[in-house]
Length: 196
Image (cartoon, rainbow, N blue to C red; front, side):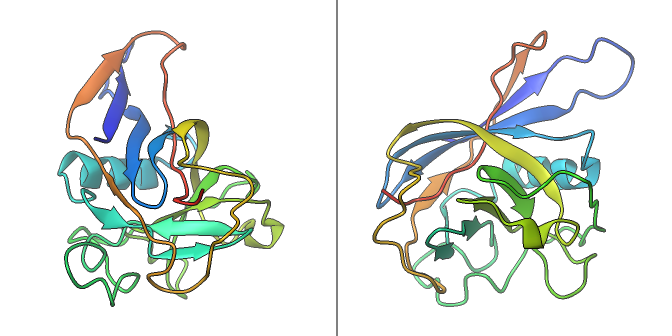
């Protein structure tokens, strides 16, 4: 189950989710924790959080895994069920969101938002970096980073991975519960690849 970690706001205003926890099952198993950068990419964090809270990510596969580069997931339209042949071509029912580019670099463990050719076309798909990808800097929105993993959910090796739609896929679920924590010691976390 994927749990959203929340934090209580100490000042007036809405409380934002600050992290995600994903249980991975498939070729690899374990839990991935991601810290969400709500100050850097508030629109992206809000969209990912809304989709997760609705349960729309439940059962979605990592449809694109490229050894030594990244794993992509989040196609809530075509990335689950019996036929995932179109995984990577869909999105959520929510509107696309504009780019929130920053000076944060795409390094190993960073979570970025996938999009089409248009910088303002991000919707529900995102990717987790296996290695540095400086050529992505300023081209895609960084909205989080993996801060902890357990089990075999993430490996620096990525041996046995293949690239392309549908290969190296695994499933993960997002829980609907918000867990509130206080202070800066909250455990917020990120996403993982499905590789062993």
